[in-house]
Length: 204
Picture (cartoon, helix red, strand yellow):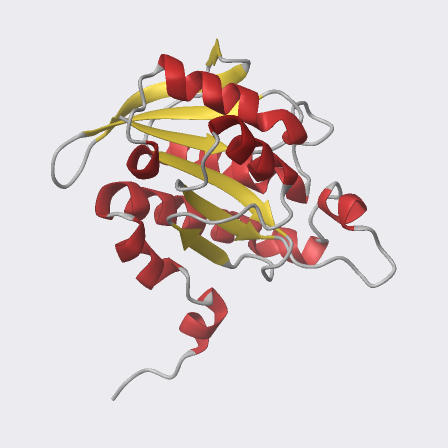
């Protein structure tokens, strides 16, 4: 079984903020595959099901912690233990926002540090390890006169919102590719700049 975690803050007040990009990707992924986060387990919205399609069906569990971001690790650690996720390095994938990436850019990694993200830092602390996959969704840097905490707790700009559904959908596809093909294979396709790919001159 694969466990996919979307990080964010709970409640309607935060639903459309940049800091909830991870949850939004998870929700889009669930919708694309006929899954639902309609159960309550581990202090989280929870869903479980199978990915059909090419190859063998793949069992997945989806987790959106309902603690605040900085305490996300408690729910993740509980789910890992209760669901019997023995191969954390291979079977856990965390989706989160990243202020160091331009808006809509993706970065898949098989392991690494928290990079200043407190939610991911708490997951790492609670699991006492950092060798698990993560998919970062770029939300861009704050303005020079703005605190990072204020930036991530704001809604996306009108310009960003115009293309946000497309970027979220691409992130959901990256998530599927990572689960089916592995992080290394998915990185080759989805870590590229989507704007550069779209604007590239066609080959003769």
